[in-house]
Length: 295
Image 1 (tube, helix red, strand yellow):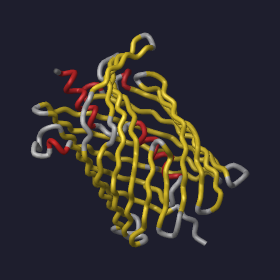
Image 2 (cartoon, one colour):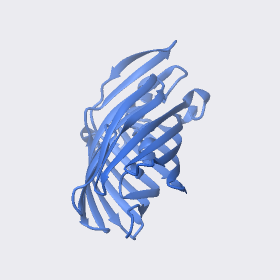
Image 3 (cartoon, rainbow, N blue to C red):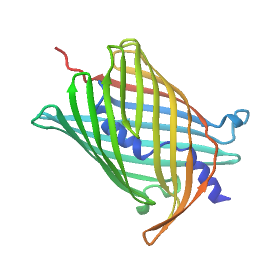
């Protein structure tokens, strides 16, 4: 029973790995940078909507992005933390993830090209196991950007991480496209993609967003949970001031997959754990600055 309970904790958790990676690399692509932010998220299957204390998760996250300009390059320091309070029936527990990434954005002599090098370190585990030696993971990414013009950029690269189920690598392909003054398409697939429309420029923006989640969490010395998840969301950003933004999201998971596994002698043995998709609502507060050059 304890094994099943821990599974329900993990399956409700949002991404630990990609969030650090996205906060480090995503900010180099759009026309703004979130220097700091905090979010609260609630998830529950529709079939359990009449059971407020059953099959739910309350998730809190916080992050910082500290950019340092070095000549034409940028160095980004990005701490990130997530705390989950999960209730499954009468069982309640917590899960924690602490991450720190260092990103270097290098501008090449050909100004159409730049490259982001990202190094990631993190501890992913249940609250009782947090920061034990076998809970740490190391990973990173390289993302190249080709600028065709001020309104269109193409990105490609690779992401890798020392998952608890073994080394994991993922090719990346993305675009930053200012379709018009109000409409933009931004993404780095398969990590995230969103279409943004400035309903009231610099005041109120709407987005249709898609993001994927992949993560593994330490449970016991050789046991882990692997999460593969996909979210489709509708997002609204309200600019309370020039730099302070309140964000509200609502969406649903799609084609969720969870597996439990054991890795011994370099070999992983996994079994699928079936669980229905869930809706989610999220609220966030961000300190945001523009990265657009002013003439």
